[in-house]
Amino acid sequence: MEIRVQSDPFDLGQETNSFAARQTGMGAIVTFTGVVRDVASGLTTMEIEHYPGMTEAALTKIAQEAMTRFALGDVLIIHRHGALAPDDLIMMVATAAPHRASAFEAADFLMDYLKSRAPFWKKEITRDGTDWVAAKDEDETALKRW
Amino acid sequence: MDVLYFAWVRERIGRPKDVVDTQAATVMDLVEELRAREVRYEAAFADISALRVAVDQELTDFDAPLKDAREVAFFPPMTGG
Image 1 (cartoon, one colour):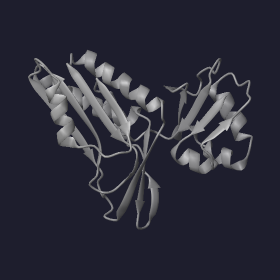
Image 2: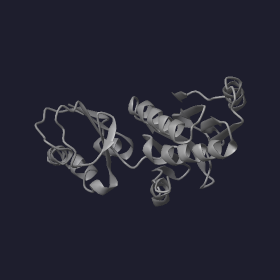
Image 3: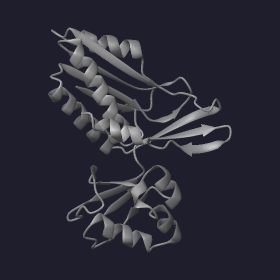
Image 4: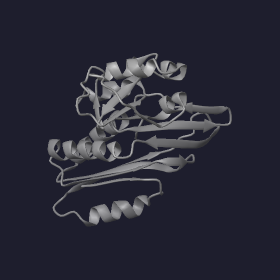
């Protein structure tokens, strides 16, 4: 299990390869990547704030829950903070399991929990001004299916 | 006790952290004390349904006890991922 919270960019290919290379007996590896999206077509910067200490603890707890619940072989979570530009990679998760169903399901579970239980806050800086991204009701509803 | 603020709560209050000397029994008692400080605190804590709280880095409720707590953080609903 590996959890990384960093301001530096990460190399998706390299991270996926090294995650895959350290598995044995895992028939399925699923990765998900979150990308900065320019919704208002005027986004210059996405600033991501987090709560150092609690972030790592919350991500570890979520990853441990996924490991147990889906009987995973391994989990990787990388989440960036700081100033990001449109099309930059924000975060990734990778899951390894003997079969694909649990690897996919675990990635989905991780993303639902990351959205509303990991202490990150996004601020969009557009040509028109700045705005904190509001949490959506469906993010909270999404947790109920687990 | 350290009281931390994040995102728009931090912006509204104008600082990331306060060190407070408090006998507040619960999170809500602490909120009342903070509200009484200054207008900007009152504004930040006007609607607590728009806020979340963590005590010693664990997400909790506003009626949570503060006995032996070292760090309390207030912030809007999280938007990770």
